Length: 131
Image 1: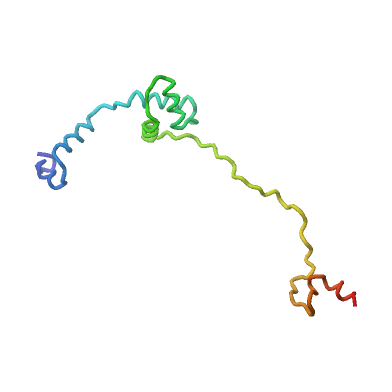
Image 2: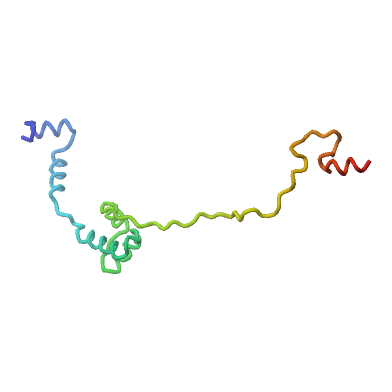
């Protein structure tokens, strides 16, 4: 009997779990941490380098120290331990150099209606004075 007064076989049938699955998970909860030594070494490397190392550099350092470990495992363990590398952001690219060149003068003052062809193109003064 389990807590609550229900039989295990009824609970497993309701949850649609195999009996072996229940006992396997129960054993996993009581099991020892096989990665304990690796976790302490990862934390040591991380603290030595003041959080600047990510999982790739930690993996290389572990290999230098004699551990044979996959980078995916290091990444997974660092995530479990809550260790993330401090990211140094680079400035975004900007080609803006400020005001380059000079602006054209506002000669027509938003008066886009012309009394004759090409008046606005050459300016009123030239056309008016040429006659």
